[in-house]
Amino acid sequence: MMPIAKLPRLTQVQAPLTHDIEVLDEFGQRRRMSIPAERPLTVFVDKRELVTLMTLGLAPELLVLGYLRNQRLVASVDEVESITVDWEVGAAAVRTRSGIDAIEEKTAHRVVTTGCGQGTVFGSLMADVESVDLPDATEARLRQSTLYAMLDQMRRQDSVYKKAGSVHGCALFRGGEMQVHFEDVGRHNAIDTIAGWMWMNGVVGGDKSFYTTGRLTSEMVMKAAQMGVPIVVSRNGITQMGHALAMQLGLTLIGRAKHRHFICYSGLARFDSEPEPARVLAEIPA
Image (cartoon, rainbow, N blue to C red; front, side, top):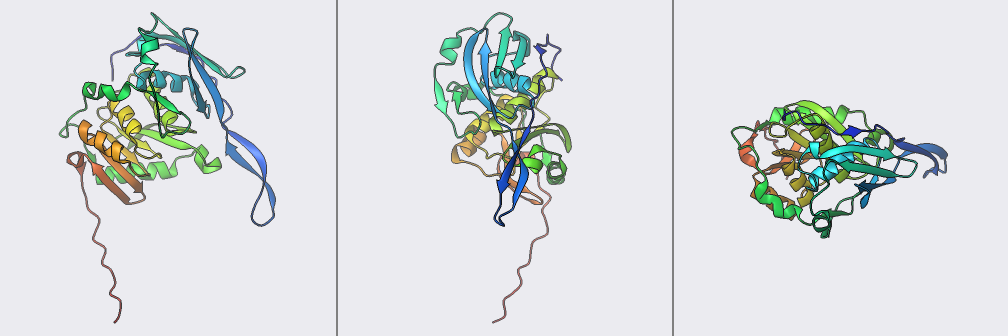
């Protein structure tokens, strides 16, 4: 746990997560189905417009707090006095205690990303690689059996995805125990929401593993590292830059993880393998 900080005041205004529509299927049948909600949330920091996030609306206050954290706009949770979300105007008003130093400079350089639901990140993120401090492989490890337990929990998790599809989910684990799970229209939003939850609850990342349904790109790797989480698991694949960054940071990436299949792409020293029995291929008669 992190030292107790002076926590910001947050509203709690979750919006409806799904929307029912009428559709026509391949059999000519008209039926009702649920699709995920998507709505803009414009973030204002001390009355200055910062960014508009497209979000599901599950935990918007935590999303905004985690966004500020992962963009390195605030260094500590106690710098934020309050976050007020108003869905009638689609806005989140952030009030800081002492302002954000050089906010114009920090937000001037934007980089277009591969993310969904969040189109840009501020360009200084990759310059912060040297400041990342992850626990070494003797302190933070993952067993293959624990990985399977994580995947089983994700398979059984009640979710918007199961009802309506078209969203990404992220979860934080300590060993095989899920700490929290969030979904959003973009994987960046989901991981930022977890970052906000960690700050509000004084949770550190060194003994945690992070699960995402999204692909392991450089920005996802960097965000996990900034949260202090040394192990990231995805049901999706990886990009070259995501792999290179993970190797530089000493972060363990496990992808294509579903049922009892996975690939460990980097940080093998943290992973305790418990190999499956080798599959014997049947010989084809001559």
